Image 1 (tube, rainbow, N blue to C red):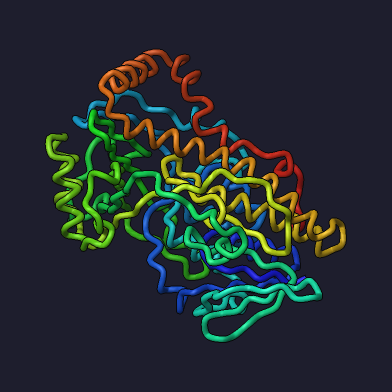
Image 2 (cartoon, rainbow, N blue to C red):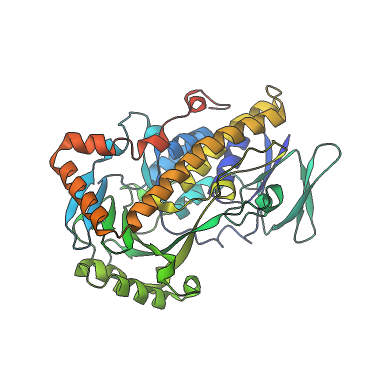
Length: 434
């Protein structure tokens, strides 16, 4: 069996690692011209679902490199007012149950570092500068990928891991492109301890935080702090200086058309203006940040899926279940896809399962868990953008109750993060090569 993966993002690379580990021939085709072309900035939250999948797919050396390079995970999730008054902090052991197994932990991870880990050992597997034009099915059941440069490659399975604007999805399931959620995110970073940029103080220096306001927008912050052994990372992997990720999420209608294309200085000024009246420390996070770190991102979401008959073409990650980042689960679900799909394809490669059944079983389970996670993301986005004063008052009162009574906090938040990270039945069984 030969598997063709279109797209060398996080999900596609994770799948490639799993297939190589299982002894299945695989090639990844990435439209970027080189591995250094993609910026891949910002911190990711890898939940236990993502950690579990990475351990299943990565060889031991790469898994250990991942564990060496993850950020310091502490501080929980705080809900704060725009005047920096803490309403409640959800502790780490409430977000996810403690476990001695490193694959059952959540980790802050720098996205560029994670991509370096996922690329390690795939020399010769990943082909850069290859943009898919279309694919065709052969009479012998194979799939041929046709590329923009006129080249073509043939395989037994073609996997679309080519993101929100997936060329594979548009041919495989036309009319199912993601639709706008009506929100826009402005993201930027601030050095945590460097001389450049505004100071980061108090609660903002730890964990993740959601700054709530009576306006129809909110600010999310999260810390990436390097581990103490940063200098010992293997394979040439590197880490950035410690930083704070900031994301101002607003309703799209609050911005003029073309905001996404504005240069960094204008995005910085727009964020600072929108946050005017907030605590001065928060306003400075935008007004004095490096404009080169700013970017604007319209949020999209995949449409509710119908059932489709499996074929030798399939999709994973944002190519099939794009979601707003309001629950931090986009990458985690792509990793889960890769874990399940590599197991099923490995079974098919050794003759244990018919190929179409292996792909169909993957798609059935993927539709279930991924679109459940999308519902969580959409709920979180709506709650954050709800400017109804009665609803805002009710939420803040509830948070204060949870802060005062630990039992109420555990009961109120115990499932908020854990439900989408809980192991699926197949994740409790050892996979090929584990």
